[in-house]
Length: 125
Image 1 (cartoon, one colour):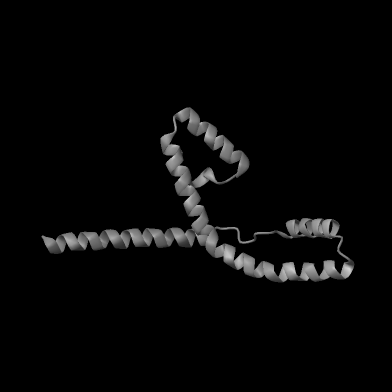
Image 2 (image 1 turned 180 degrees about the vertical axis):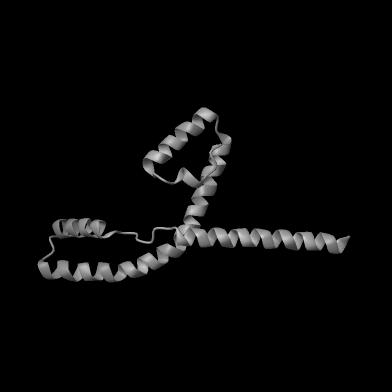
């Protein structure tokens, strides 16, 4: 009897571990890696140029720095994003569970407006 119970617990742990691993793999394969797209980098450079009154040499050097460091930022964000998204998803699921149906619809509308695409993988009820 005890052996069967231990086998069931082991099977449960393996199943949960496999599910977690597949979820992580899926998330890593389907995440946007780029944190600051080129358009946003251009916007940032434009703002830095004007607010700091950079000369052309400073502007060129800072542009090179930002482009070089973006690789590191992308790599870090690629590792952190699934963890952050998981924490946010769990928070939203817990919040939705507390709300009435009319409140759920309003919250979903708010989130869809601020962060399109976030709700597509969460339970609808």
